[in-house]
Length: 107
Image (cartoon, rainbow, N blue to C red; front, side):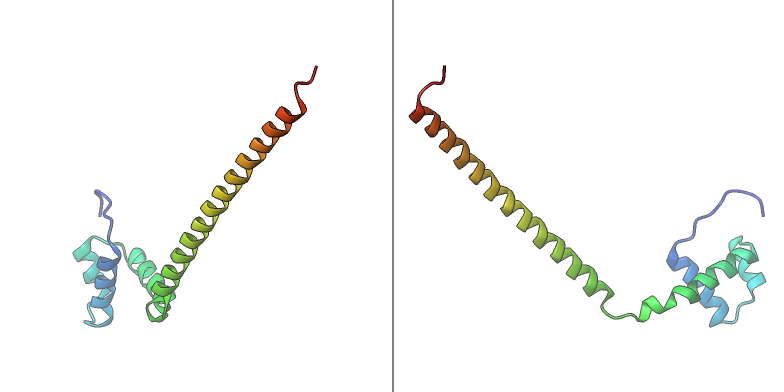
């Protein structure tokens, strides 16, 4: 089993594991067919079982969308605060200039 390393997509890995679990294909046959080592297959299977609960979690997409909208709202709020600060600074500078002009030049 020498040669180039292959990268399998998540879908391919699930398809291979499914063939073993559902179709009862022997691990040795799958490894020969796909050029895998048995260790690799069993690591995939372990990950599959450890992370399989994610497929049944509700709202994971909704949670991501909620977080994105929250981040967007916070960015808008920050931009508004920056605008307000810029206006206040502009007024402050104008007041200082007016005050300096009213008091006359300092020698």
